[in-house]
Image 1: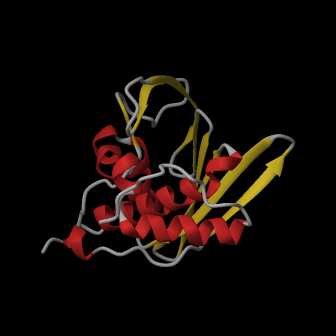
Image 2 (image 1 turned 90 degrees about the horizontal axis):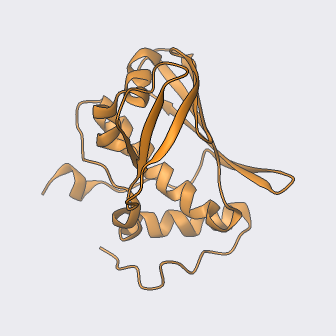
Length: 183
């Protein structure tokens, strides 16, 4: 049995949504046991991102003004994405994503701000929750491999988190994908 087979995500938490006009923003906060410099590398280095994030990039995200091709898991078409802010190791912005890193004790409070379609808020929260778990394990030296896109939606822990976040946010559980298999 592998570490991945033994992985079960904890309960939904550390997430909120904000509405500004027609724009919805999903905000997730996670306390990591690793210093901001180590977390920053995992947020900006393409090799690290491939291990935990729900997307891949063809270049480093550590320099403002850089444009990379960002490809979300399960989508064939890369999106040209410009890094608009890279203040290591505190703030990183690109596309519609903003990361804030705050040193807390010997670790980091990591906050993700991302714009999201209201219909997919609970799905996004569940997916990022699992991505943060995978990131924490990667940084701890016990990687379990990326769980993202359609693969994440088939994961039993994702199904539970999707329902928990939907209840927390007061939204309906999306009826998509209609026949997601459970594992």
